[in-house]
Image (cartoon, rainbow, N blue to C red; front, side, top):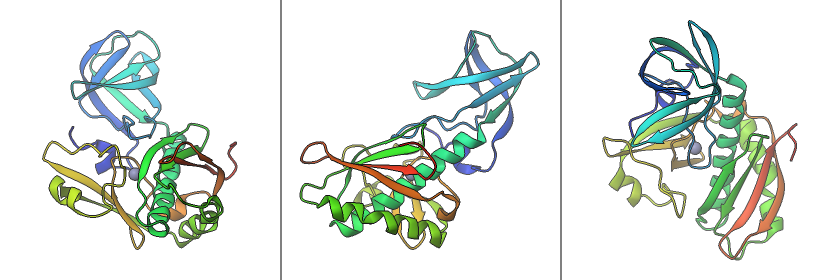
Length: 241
Ligand SMILES: [Zn+2]
């Protein structure tokens, strides 16, 4: 994997680029502003515009390290295209994703370094995180809701670093997911996301520039899904849960 364009330029949502390979209904681009999804995050949505019109992006498929953009119609594109990310969907995913880091940081701090066992962000503005929390009291977990919203109100900035994979594995808590380590870049580094003053962890997703850009968050539900899977469901305010 190479570093994503959206990691280097998260604010650039429209890119003019070239088709490098195509088949009916799928295309590889010289440069893509779309996040391909992964680690519980959904792929970006958006459109490709070319001389013949506009096509909706139907998905992104990774094949042997190459990203194929799947199109809503079986058109075979060539030449120059304009790739445009859906800004509302990107914003919603970035809010949810950043808020899962905040939840995850607070759980890690309050519950003796409890690790994540799963995560999934949903298109309806909700997300679930599973934690290895065999003995935690659900009322103590519910009490994290005002703390999450306090971090949002503090508007803490996010920043990024690329650290050597061996260093990332050696730092306690940097690899927060118990089962899945984030993919390292082709140069052997791991991307580390820091919410300044709160948390650092390895992650390849899209996030907000600062926590204050998120809507408030509610804890919707807490389920016991087995001894090592305490499932916490959160939702952005004004979304269905
Ligand atoms: Zn992340």
